[in-house]
Image (cartoon, rainbow, N blue to C red; front, side, top):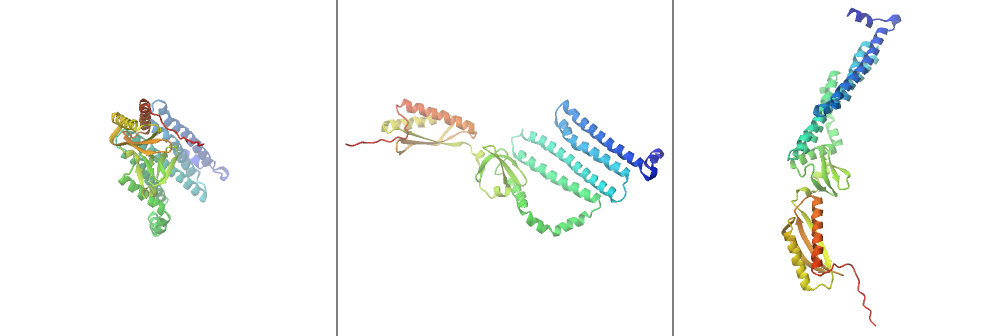
Length: 350
């Protein structure tokens, strides 16, 4: 210890060469330690990928910087700069250490949330899928607030007085942030009311798509055009929400027109055959289906078919409707009828 003390106090010509040398050694040692920490944490990932190896890889960056800032902190202490320079340098390093520690906790939260999301995806309920992102964001907010308060207490700031002072200006702050606060309360209302879940296909106002994420302030919807629309929760609560995923089946309408040379008997046979076709199709809900000769069009006799197909999957719905269209073509052909197309008949008189 006496030898180390002599090195620290070595100051030829009033120049603290001992402290400067130890400071430089500390900086070099911190950079070396950063490389070691980063390589050690990333090494397990090359062997087997699981929750812990992915977590260690995510911690490699912030943990390496934590080692550097810690080494710099003690190096600055050894250097013992005079005046306010030393205090400013130590305060800056302490701030960096605080934010690095918060970042490490954020990485842990993200990896735990990712693991929980994977487990939630295996359950039938989608409530946990919607709850996990909200809990992740709330936990981050709490950790950030606790970290800032801890740092302020460590530096001797009157945290209680500051909080009291914020209470005085709380009304003005609440007025300025009323939209954000309303968004938070709207997200709570959506969570308890549950008009939709993550993965549901909904229509909110003029926007329709799949719910990707329900956040504290807004909800993200992936549209059919694969664009990502972000809608404030306050607007969603005040809008009419049509949850299309909750319907048990899809409504289908088919209109067809046959030529005017069709006889009344042929039309009756066509209606009967179309109704039988719907009754025999396992994908069609026969109850509530309608097939009727509706109108005399300008160039066709029109038949309307309204029924439901027993699926909510859009691709299966399209496939079922295609098969029905092909069957309709066969029926019309077997009855010796023809589909009409827009045409005009001109009569000439002499």
